[in-house]
Image 1 (cartoon, rainbow, N blue to C red):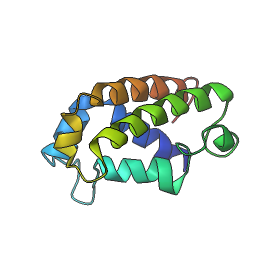
Image 2 (image 1 turned 45 degrees about the vertical axis):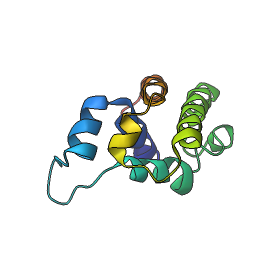
Image 3 (image 1 turned 90 degrees about the vertical axis):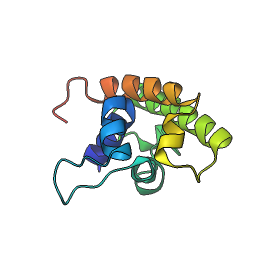
Length: 119
């Protein structure tokens, strides 16, 4: 499940990927699917890392530093969802003035999650 968490963070960190896959639906192969909602479900519902980053140390996260950056990502996502709601299209989320904070937090989190890692 850690690989799925890292993959979700990576998707949130990459605006080019978001535009290609989430908006234009240019999937790498026919069995592939991805969108904003899927990544939110991985981070909140499936793993719970954004609900309790520090409680995820030892299961999905390896250190307090990882929990800190995932907590910052959760804050950015929560701020986005508080303003935009949970019913927007991917293009509407990407167009939100709060989106760049999500991308920035995800980029930082991805760098930390993949430091000295073979993920």
